[in-house]
Amino acid sequence: MGIIFHITNKNEYEKVQKTGSYKHISLDKEGFIHCSQHYQVCEVADFIFKNQKDLILLAIDEAKCKHEIKYEGPSWNTFPHIYGELNTDAVVRTFDFNASQEGFYFPTEALDLVVQQLSQEPNGPLYKLSKHYDAMNGSVGKDIDFYVRYAKQKNGSVLDLACGSGRFSIPIAKSGLNVSGLDLSKTMLALAKEKADKENLKIDFRLGDIRMFNFGKKFDFIFCGFNSSQHLHEEKEYRSFLESVKEHLNQDGLFAFDVFNPSISMLNRKASDKFLVSKYKDPEDGQEIEVWEYPSYNSAKQLSSFDFHYIKNGVLLFEEKFSLRNYFPLEMDILLRNNGFDIIQKFGGYDDGPFRPESMKQIFICKPY
Image (cartoon, rainbow, N blue to C red; front, side, top):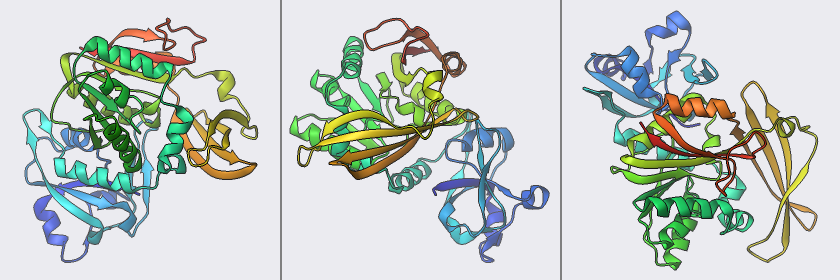
């Protein structure tokens, strides 16, 4: 449950506020009221509301809506639809909604509202117990060396997207570069800040959503490591992510990120099977924790879902569930090209080896065109 948005005429909405119920013409014609997620709003407005004045943007708390909300539309870009009249007490904020010469712009206060709401949603245990995340994934690795190396080569300001506990941000800052980081997890950011303070590092860690963000400045090197962008499941989410990246890159800036190269054999694993994928020491008592994976795959949505069981002394310590979107090689190449990026290099590993069919990773170095 989060914040969704509806665009309407300011005067029309003011008339119905006293009644406590808002009804749009689409309810009679289509059976629902059209709404958008934050990263969809401006594209919808530019298409439907061009040159219209006196518009207002309603910020709606899904949890307070009396009628059912369904996410519908093409699989690559689903929209929230309210199947009934909108009770106005579900509208938590309203914003004047205006267009510039370039088109409509999303109010900064509305984005802050969304981020605060999203950050309140329950994270899985691994992200709440952030020290377990660090203990399992380590503070050294080929991926860390890779991003540190490319950040130093660019030798400018750096933005770490989905920065988590600072696994990349901190070693890059230790190399002498000016680093900023963005993440939606308050607990992960708290751990990142704690670690940075111990190293006497000044890193601009901010709470935010990689699908839409505004630092108010540009960077020389932006990256998103550790497969983090695969948490974006729909094409429009990814497109909004790339648009935000491009808006924050200097003219000669570079963008780097990594995703898995989907393996058919891995995708075809049985959901009933389990796999030991990791072992690490409990940060509290030093005892060994085993991580067992129970996978499943939705081929229609290209989603790999994972149910991870964290076992200590034969007992389930906690469970973590999430899904990653699989982006196939040509699909990602086209997505980047269609959204303003040229691929300078595409690697199959963190040693700068070329991408091959059998590569486990797709690692991109891009520049905007």
